[in-house]
Image 1 (cartoon, rainbow, N blue to C red):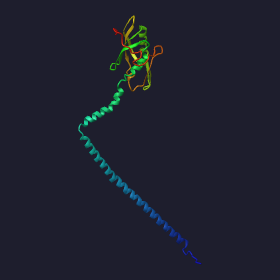
Image 2 (image 1 turned 30 degrees about the horizontal axis):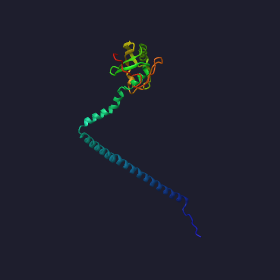
Image 3 (image 1 turned 45 degrees about the vertical axis):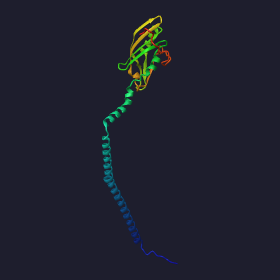
Image 4 (image 1 turned 60 degrees about the vertical axis):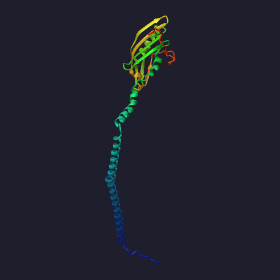
Length: 227
């Protein structure tokens, strides 16, 4: 049976343990410093070498691409055409939506009143309607319908805006077969603007709907000898 004796006094043991811990601390600090130095070197290389190389390469590519573009024949014309193509959507939005007139006329025209000719002038914002009716009472009802029409614009939030102004029964005639008429007026250009969401309103006393469509009862050729 072997017996071991610890011949080192406690002070000597603690001293050796402290020296061991010191060596470990120095080694750890050295490793940390080495890692920091490596990171710094890598950062310097990335900023000073790699980024400069990337910028230089990108600049060369841009110059090469610019040279190729500038060498294209008729480049100015191509750019001009492309610019015009890009402007088409905005130009289309500014064009008047003429087709809306059929919906408006359907709401506005009283029963028995027909339209033989309708002219819109989008430069002066004027409209002329020529047609026929059984009598002048129907023509007057049509004139009142146009005068009282208003609209709401959901796009701008405007409500109760006068749709037609300066509505005038400029000429009329009647005989035993009925009456013919010509009504002139100005219209609000927003009624036909594509960007506006318009809803037309006619007071109940004059809102006498017709059968919509070109083949309905609204559109009819003027009688011979009419206006």
